[in-house]
Amino acid sequence: MNPNHPELEQHIVKGALLSTYPTFKDMYDNNIIFGYRGIVTSDLVKAVLDIMGHRMDEEVNDKRLSKKVFNVMVECFTNVYVDEDKLADSAYDPMAMLMVKRVNNSYRVITGNQVPTKSVTILKEMIDKINFMTHDELKTYYQEVLLLEEAGSTGLTSLAIIDLARKSRNKLVYNFKFESNKFTFFTLESEISKNSL
Amino acid sequence: MLEPLKIEPTHKTPKVYFEPANNIFELSGRSIPEDSVGFYKRILDWIDEYAGSPISKTDFKFELEYFNTSSSKNILELLKKLEKIHQGGSAVHIYWYYDEDDEDMEETGEDYKALLSVPLELIMKVY
Image 1 (cartoon, rainbow over the protein chains, first blue to last red):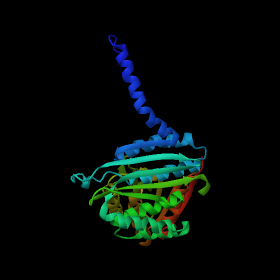
Image 2 (cartoon, rainbow over the protein chains, first blue to last red):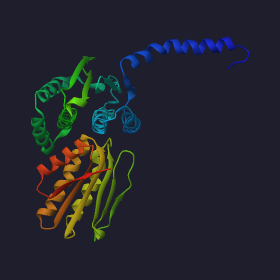
Image 3 (cartoon, each protein chain N blue to C red):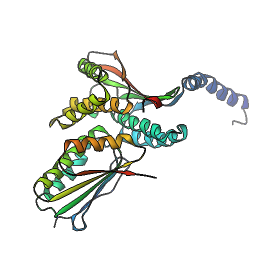
Image 4 (cartoon, each protein chain N blue to C red):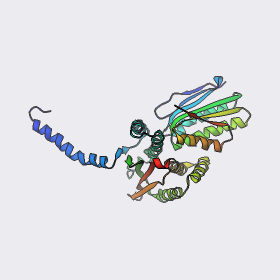
């Protein structure tokens, strides 16, 4: 504290609290147990997983559910690693979003990141197709895609989405927000509920 | 005999310990590298060399905590190479460990077992 101007120090602290409180309250009211916006690297994901592993163990009494949510986080978060090949492109925004929220007895793992606008149709069709499959159909489809010799990035994306649908045992929820002819912001939500285990 | 392959684990990559002289083949820990192809290349290259003169029975242990999709593709490549060694007449037995609460790791082991002809045994770790 500044001994010459204690009132100024108090004002700054109070002002900071006032501006931050709505954000905190919003997170609290929406049961957001983790939120991040920034560049996603493997170091960041490793740190987040370490924190969230402990958090989920404290938060959830059911070890199977806790492990399931954790596994979905691993897949979701590693899917939005920053694409270093695109960093040279000024239209590319490497900022991504990671979020985990609780809704009643379920947990939602949400990611958001830029994807090439030209890949939106393929991605949408891929998720729609996967959302129509039963758990057994997903298992067979996963094995088929895993076996493809030259998976490439589309194959890996497909495999990752099938994997998410299998692990969460729920339909995936997605949204595309067009930003430019080059990039679109893609959000993907996986819900894991105790009832579906 | 081929020199052992030992790679220390990191927060993002698994421990690799392949020592043919003592029939120790172990891949354990986490696998979420940004460049999984780059990380697994060294392992796959070593197995290619090992396939030239494998020991009579290779016991291969997978004890993974968690891994992502790009790693799963590389793990399949590794398993396929082990399958070839087995088909070539040198026995290979895969041990796939999973935690009792980890249904996903169990399912992944079942997937690999369904896709390969090499013996793959699923072992639940009970705490």
